[in-house]
Length: 279
Image (cartoon, rainbow, N blue to C red; front, top):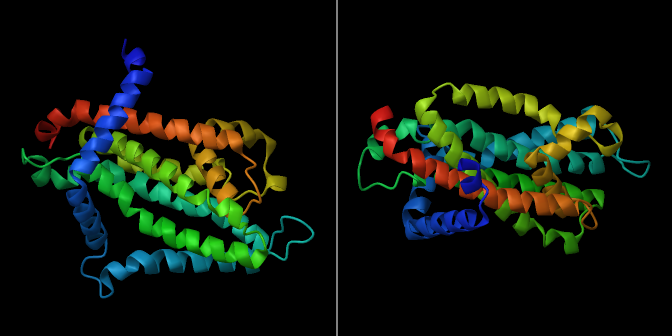
């Protein structure tokens, strides 16, 4: 019965509608809480919220240096090194944004007990702000990838139009995932450490660092099973490929984004009445 409700197309559509309506209704609060989330991360630091841009820029500079001058791998005979750097960064940028959301989502509700216990406060804003707060990091990273892709001659303007679609899929997916882990984190305090450990291993189990020629064959089934792989491939299609080479990934990532958002919303709303007692 539970499985029927979860996989019901009608139930999924209604959940997506209810979730999006709630976000629209609390749009001003969502924006305020997202900005506050970014401020809180760098509170007390001299540059403050400027680190929202500075941190990913420094990280990207480090990765560009490492993959261009240290590892020096090539995608082919005509690649001077920038092509491989663009390839890796096109997968690493969304992966880092994903891990940022996954590491922060479990504590999104539990660290805001005073807000959650206020009857008039819509606590569903808290997981959403974690997902949205990862967008600046993602945007800075994507800008660096576009620059490296242009230098490497792998930037194709007719493919860039797909980038907004990839970002929408990312946001919808991360919002749903954040709802799930935020709800679980209220009751299981260890989930943040477990997720952080899993994402550190997951970096090597997804098509992030591997070039097509060096991908171990035993990893391929894991690649295709994981929804994160398909999201990474969507970004790569938009950032460095001349045309869509992963059409199935766009379908899988889109369907999964809708499903996980609906499921996460329903899961969060189901446990929401118990948050006050658990906190």
